[in-house]
Every structure is written in structure tokens, then in C-alpha cells.
Image (cartoon, rainbow, N blue to C red; front, side, top):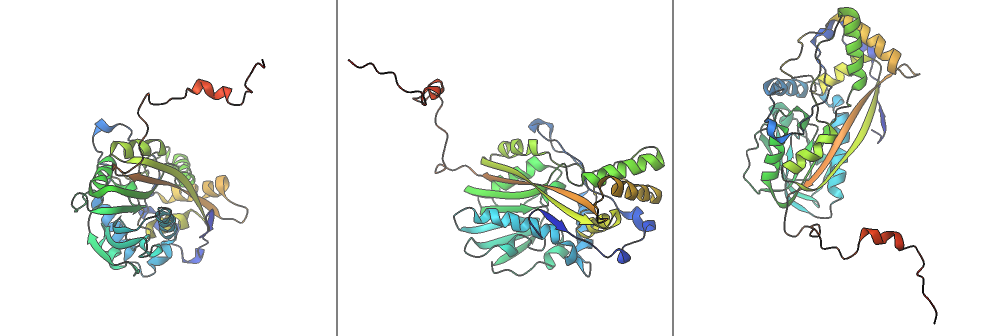
Length: 340
């Protein structure tokens, strides 16, 4: 997959018929969690998400749906390589089939613990050169002691967490001092084309639209959440991956194959056939390319945060400066000296 745009054209002949599209639920939307005092939300059915991931992992040709996880896992691994140190013990949260670990080597990570909510995904994990222990565990309840890991990784799993602030605090807790957390999750603009098309299609055929939306974390909140969890020296950046499909049916098919179907408690269990047909036409009309394909945009939020340690660089104390900002404007001005 290229860094910018990935082209994925599936064989339309093998796609499910429109009549079977009522089984699909989609992911998109935005979750704002900037206030620390509101408590955790209970938005997602975690047991449903476990079943969805198990189903996706049991597909006979399930690897064909791993292209996005593999690409983002590679980009997360690149951020590990940017840190000039070796990590004796690392944890990959929601690692599934080792989408990050397959891009790492023992020179940077000596040992790895791989966790996932899906036992079938763990059984399908890929072999890497890093000695790896797999643990069946929910990302919301990490079964590890405090100050255990030098590095914690996560790729495309935190957006299904009910209590994201609590999960970040647990990650901070299991890190050793001066340990680092590197993660990637989908952002609020993900699949905006699909979301808009479904809403317009349902409005046209049914006079209104139902919530097919799973809430995501906004990038404006992510830095606050990391800071509230206790991380320092924060880095948050955004990337976009745009993938082209033959049509809306293929988009939804691949989301199912990724295990990324909606698991919100308030999701609608069925999608009307006529609404999907209308949404498919709207999708092509509003966003279709000249070659007949339609784009699906994934907004990826990358985050890096460090657990505090006395060896880390710290800002100077307030009032310790010996130069005024007002003097900066005088630097480029020639000095006026009087010759005697």
C-alpha cells in the first residue's frame, strides 16, 4: 500500500447481493471526551465486538482484509524506529495478528506481549523474530502489574473502548518510568463519504435516518486525554489513507471482513435494501471517480506520550529567563554608537 492513496478494486461478481445488505452496520462519527469529570461512557457492546473480530478472524481468506491494519501497523513501527533505544519488554494492545510486530526486529524490541479480545485473532498471529507471549485480554482491563513495560503499542483498537480516559490511565500505569506509549486510532472524519451517503439515502427512502454511527474521538480531545492520563512530551499528528472501491457494497464487505462493524448499543440491526441502493447511487454521484470507483477515507490519529522520569528534559522554571521577549525586536537593529 502506498503512503498516500491505496487502490483496492475487488471483483464485483463475488460481492454479496444488495438484498443481503441488511446485515451490515457501519462505523463512523465523532466522540468528544474533553471533560475529565464526566465519567466513562458505555457506548459499545464489547461482547459483540469480540464476536465480530472472532468471525472476521475465522474467514477462510481473511488476510485479504488486513491491508489497512498492516499499513497502519507499519507506520506505528516506523515511529518506534524513530526512538534511538532498545526496549527490553513491550506490550501490544489489541495486536490481533501481529500487525505491528511483523514490522519490528529484536534490535529495538527484545520481548513482546501481544493481547487481543479475540482468541481466534491471536491464533492467527504471524510469526516474528521477536519472542512473543500472547494473552487473551480486553483492552479496557489490562491484566498487568504497575511499572512492567518499557514500551506500549496500539494500532486501530482504541476507538472501540468505552472508557478511553481509563484505558490511557491503565497504559500509563503499566509503563515503567521513562517508558513510551505509541498508538494509532481512527479519527472523526473517517468514512465521511459513507456516512453522508447512508444518511441521504435513508432520508430519501424512509423520511429520516437512523444512527449507524459509532462515535470516534476528536483530534482536539486526544492531547487533553493523554495529558490527563499523566503522559508528558506529547506528540499527536493526523494522517489520511484513502482507498478506492468499486462501490458501497465492497466498502461494507471489507469493513465486515476487518471486524469493524458497528457494535454500539443503539445501533440499528437492519439496513433497508432500498435505502442501501439509494445510498449507493448517491455515493457514486457525490464522490465517484472518473474510473467508476468510490473513495473511502480513513483519518488516522497517531499519538506518542512518555511516562515522567527525572531524567527527562523539563521546562525552565517560571521567571528564570534573563532575556525579555521585548528585546527580540532589537536583535536585527544596528547599534547606535557615538565616536568620540
